[in-house]
Amino acid sequence: MYDILKLQQKIVPEMIELLQKRYNILRTIYYNQPIGRRILADELGVGERIVRTEINFLKEQGLIKINTPGMSITSEGEDIISRLKDFIHELKGLSEIEKIIKDKLGIKDIVIVPGDIDEDKTILNELGKAAANHFKGLIKNGYTVAITGGSTIKEVIDNIPKVSNLKDVLVVPARGGIGRNVETQANNLAASLAKKIGSSYKLLHVPDNLSDNALNTILNEKDIKEIVDNIHHADVLLYGIGRACKMAKRRGLSEEKIDELSQLGAVGEAFGYYFNNKGKVIYSTPVIGIGNEDVKKIKNSVAVAAGKSKAEAIVAIEIHNSNSILITDEGAAREIINILNKKE
Image (cartoon, rainbow, N blue to C red; front, top):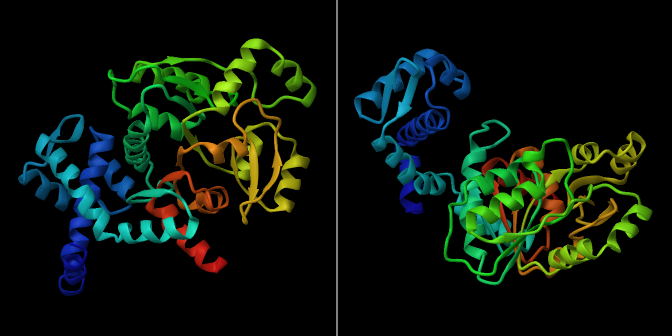
């Protein structure tokens, strides 16, 4: 298929461009329906006249319908979107990019969804579906599953279908929660996941950023010891990746410490650990829960992060992480290739 696509791109490139344009229009309508023509044009970054022409065509083909609230996708349109996903993936050469990144980073596997979440927020849903599909396939009877918090991980949990055939599975937060948004904290997401897969769960009612003295005191509590032990022996891990300075602010670090991290070359963060562009930990916040060494021992881990702006952070955290499956988007993937080529 890839060879045929290459030939088509050389002989009739306008056909390929038109296909991608109409696919993007359908997908944008699907994730924003019902949506008006003007808003659609703004979302796509094109003129209303172009959108009007394409809308008329898609309507004639029975792929969209137009009502008073706006445009929406028909069942046939949904089928087209679903069937075109793999084709667009090959069309953009993402399979080849997956092989290159997998080998150069030294990770177990990688899945790339088309688009860049920095430019198109609807990509988050595609990312969540792809990650959910891989993540649920790793969970087996008797497993302990650990998950971190964050809006990206919430999207993954939201896309996991209900499962009823799993037995003796335990879901735990990978570490304490941060921020004011309870919906995206690890405790809440762990409970949501447990409900979906019919498993039990335990919560870690501990702030994520504690002093060393407070940390040592809490770790002596029997209930805390038990759940921390569960976390350290997790069979499957689902986690997000953040940019160092942004996460430092979210975790409440002082401006002096943030400046220090910047001077030390911190580019990525995961689990409260800050990494430089060589993949070395240069600072960590006091931890109750999973640690960097624990991550390397877990046989099944899924990292979910996307957007060109996160590429450097992804490389810093994922390089040589041989047990990791990376779920990302095209924007991050292409920038990862650039970063790795520069390193060489």
